Image (cartoon, rainbow, N blue to C red):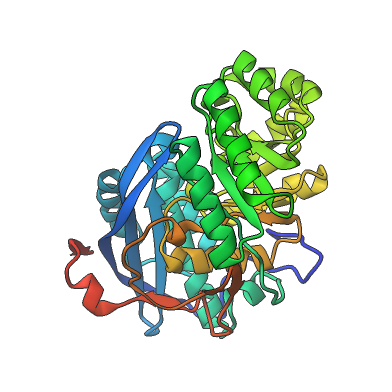
Length: 386
Ligand code: MG
């Protein structure tokens, strides 16, 4: 079965490697990264609730994976991820890591949903597969090297503080794309956006994200008031339970609409596309359940000519690296929201991996994801070996 039909070469994910790669054990770590509190419409995160795994094999190769639980969006916590990871590890022990689709199917049969924790396991299998072929993950996925440029996100605060932060980012980090979190009272959100626009001027591209925070009338009010501010798009103006109202909002709004929380997997993407509900769709590994499903969403959207953004939660540079590899293999991804670890992480436990040059991301050309977590850092984490 060919899984991904980009313009580049196609990789065959069903075909096992020429040799069996038996999973001998899996190590699971709570990767709690201290953070400056980060606020969106639905709540505040005080630390990054991440989970890190290492899959060990009989060939001596180790695959790494990370996920970032964001309870208010995906419905999982670091605790639920940790508990399920132990079950998943038990299911996989002794099995072939190169049979990627079979392994992922086992997780879906074991428990529905829980896409965030599943994404860490998917990532580790793909890291192993690329390492076994001795190529960077983007090459394994059929991509080619370039340096995507990310936006950076400003969390919700007073209009004055958000405008100050916007100016600071533009001046000190040469940011070209600002993503502004909104989704509170529309009147206040309008003030926030006008203050930011005044602070940064016309050369900066603004993206806004309501994180499901507006009702239909509020969204009409906010989007109409902001229509001359040259906004690239508005993410998820309405709660996902109101998807059927999106086509009407899209007809009224001059600001293009992007679905985020409404689309977890490619079935959701197909539904939104059928409804003509959005102009763009945001892919996240923590919603999709990993790279394999992300590729399916990408292909569905490419076929419908709905461009994608690649986003994330609060991942470290390890999962960020995996996402950049994915971006390099997905020509329908036009927007990059890859600032996860810049959103107030106070520590960086990652060895190697992608690095930022201002907001451009440079990917290491080494086999697999090309990143790992520092063993000394892992010493202080709660861990279990299965
Ligand atoms: Mg969003």
